[in-house]
Image 1: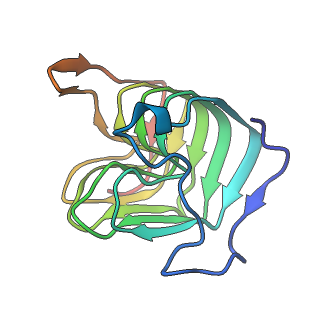
Image 2 (image 1 turned 180 degrees about the vertical axis):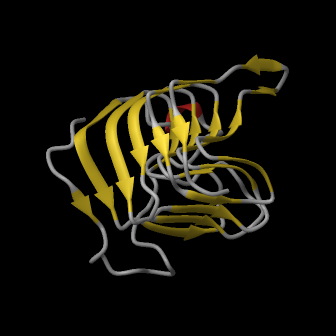
Length: 171
């Protein structure tokens, strides 16, 4: 997929505090992750409002592909319950993210959850040449770029990497 123009969700009506549903928001089922290539083609997505109970929130909930050349601005992603894995771009990442940026007018939060990051909530993949200036908050495992990087799951060690990326916001 290649984004052909900027997208602005600001005028989309809110339903229960939401104007956007994350793409592929089920990390448990491998078949429901987004497994394609998404090239933002240096465009911006803005005005996203997500406010829900479930985990794996962001532009993509669960991601296992390639995401590149995209900026997110003027958006708010919030988990209301004890769930986590919240990021402006990806809730849980098994793929690669390159040259993606989250602006200072973005907030990413979880009331009682964890694994909350400016770009990615939980990272098992790779992040390169990306920046975040988002305001990020959660109960634990909070980070400017990623909330949690790698973990052992079901006895299988998975590593995530963050290279040449920068956080310059507040958490």
